[in-house]
Image 1 (spheres, rainbow, N blue to C red):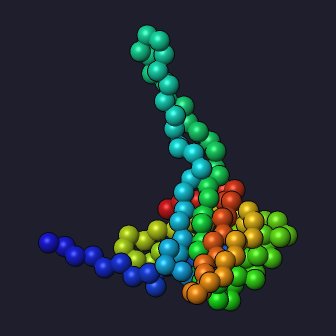
Image 2: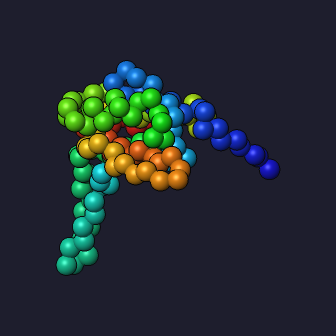
Image 3: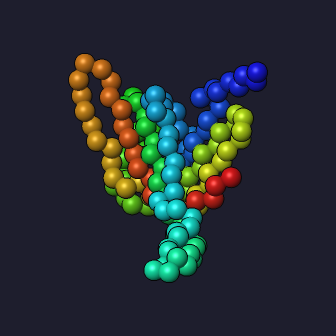
Length: 131
């Protein structure tokens, strides 16, 4: 039996040169917006596979409302500036996502109650390099 250990402290996220801290439980999610290939079957059973060249991806970052970077991300959402973003997981297996141009789609929604809320940001990645 081979036991592996996951440590959330092995994750680093950098937006526009600033390291993010104060993640909530879900931390981060990354997903390409479309599949890499699509398949079509003709009326007589002929199959063709088409490469999808769409480089877009979406990264969802969830911070605690007390994170020092909430104001920065809200400011980037308001400005619409294109910024670099990187996500590095230094555990096993090591995984990285590097984006040279991304923007925050909108400021995080805000809720207030008996517990501190989360701030979730959707980052539109224009040219994600996944490794």
